[in-house]
Image (cartoon, rainbow over all chains, first blue to last red; front, side, top):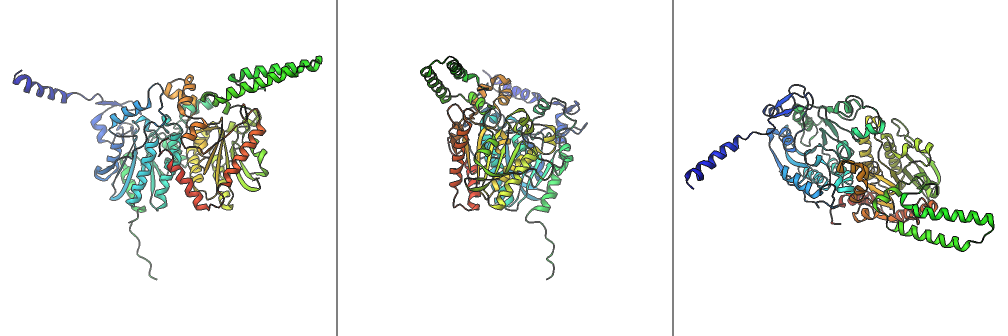
Length: 291
Length: 317
């Protein structure tokens, strides 16, 4: 042992470790297959510069994009009973859950935060698609109720950004029960005269689309997002024919009258800010007409 | 019986033996009453044994039995002066969901049910009980109608799920289901739901966010079909049996989880063996459920229904 092994070697190792390359420096665009450099992707909000494809992003990234100056205060999620059915498929659900929790440093597939959008206070609940497919079980349902309570307490809008394959099968019928429960969450906000706004992102399907996602006072969608109830494969197997181009995409829903507006990610915060400006409690009022 | 399930085979064999004996005795004037009586007793014992411990996967088969009574069978059995009502007033009539006003135990009620149909022609007409958005919108309309006239609502749920089709998606299947759930939760009249066969996912909860949820003994209620769950989580549809175990989809499971309120006993050997008795038992259970709301005003009916769903999953099981 000498200073060389004790002092220099660790330093050298540290330097080498730092230089360790990210394994995802380059990413292939799912839209046009162009190779995209991560730094450029980040500055462009994970939208492909070549074809405009909106890549999926995590919940934290979403919160940073939506809130003014990327500043927000994150809420802890309410605790729920983990693995109520002691579910096991090829793996134990509890193991899948613990693994996802470790990967994301979060207790479940949703992040709730408060801050300002366009200067107006708002609460945002953003789904984490990477966390077991953004699936909705007890934890997500309870988090939606907590987010609604927070919006009511702050007298501000609740903005929900789903990115989810639907209900969490491993919680069985209890995940189905989150459909009425999240609709009740939305109602808590609406009953107080506060806006409940949904921003549909890729993907929003199954039980999440048929509950909290479709009862918004206003419903926005990101370009190209897949949105629907039944999975495309299930439909194809049922009708045994190819699905039409653009089926279940945000633009398709827009044409069918199901969403208010398709908004590119770069404009999302600005559009939300404008809407909140019109709808929030402290909005400017015209001078009362003379009596 | 024309249709019997695999695990009913021993009973079916006994029953065919009984039929043969009867045939023989009438032809040859033999007295075999004792033997027939013995076989009948044995068949009943077997049935009791088999149905006393059906596995979840076997319950899935019973719940889907083609001869099981369907929504319209129940309505015909215990509702009088029934007037069917159709259409969503926006796009179409969807026969996968039937509805109307009728008299139940002396009271006018609104009835809504997913109907699978009982022969090929009927099954096609009712799209095998898989509704499109207009079906769920019709249900919303009928629930609002009940609310306006202060009529209790009874829903009968028996569906594999909402129809997965291009047209259904184009017209907003997800929105129609979400709004149906929202309407269930908003009513200021009693809402009683009965899961009579398959309670298939969103297509079921759309009609079942109720004050009281009854469930027939061998019905199932699940977030996804065992086959669908198996193909996603096990990567093979052949694991459906395991998935059925894991999903906790039997009436016993659901009562333990607090998702349903009461199990309605089925006749020995399942509702398909004695449809009349099944109808009578469900009728009694529905009547008891409706009586329990007597004296509650609309606000408290609505609040209690909402509180009930908020409480699900919050306590241990």
